[in-house]
Length: 362
Image (cartoon, rainbow, N blue to C red; front, side, top):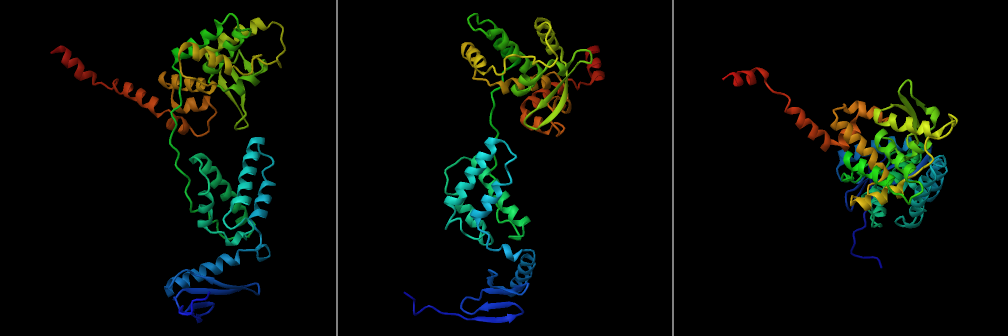
């Protein structure tokens, strides 16, 4: 029922396209774009100077919008977005489709809302519906931002309301990494399993991962044609980044590969080096028997990086070994604790030889 005591105001024109509501003093804009009246739009201020600035900004934004697309709904935009991601991996597409379904089913006041009417607070309300961790929240935020960015590109909206929402800062996980001694013990334990049919094969596969600093996918795909024993290099391909790169044939790897090449006999250059494609179970069994943490195959690559840092190899060179294109920034941030330990040891080398000699003479 209407409150008869409530004050009903009127819109008073105070300038070109500028109106003031008498009961609360809030300013409104009313403009036309291509001859179409867009109706009143709150400028969300009672300050006249700010109202004029907001009016100018509103005019500029609306001039960038394709008014024929103004009624595009969030549900339709989400469906259109999914049509643009089909080239991505199967799991990635599945995850994006799941988030779009959440948009369509759980958006505040329904996903039939026009995209032009979505506000930052709506996005926060949608994110607040779920009890998920920071990684999932950041994934949901990144996707709604991408969807709305597509709306900006299509001229449906002028600015992206998700741009002002920061992602959650993730804490750095502590990843278990074996020492070189642990790694050697794991390989030896796997090879010592007399009743495991592929013990030797699994041991070679794990030894290659830790000695070459490559991942399981790179090792599984390695062919004899990728190894140049004369030039001392290995050509490989990182599936995650879809890029090929070359690493040295490290001395600790050469012996293993030469032994396998000799035992392989008259095999073709196009044959894979390892018959084993995944030694996860063998690794888990060795860790259990040795009382070690449950290291993963990826942890063996980290073992390689830590050892390289401890050996004094420069971080940019290690980054090159890992096909990182950031000059070592990722390694510095991930392995800073190892690099700091090495730096402290190096600091002890900075002695004053002259002073030391004078002390000895005294």
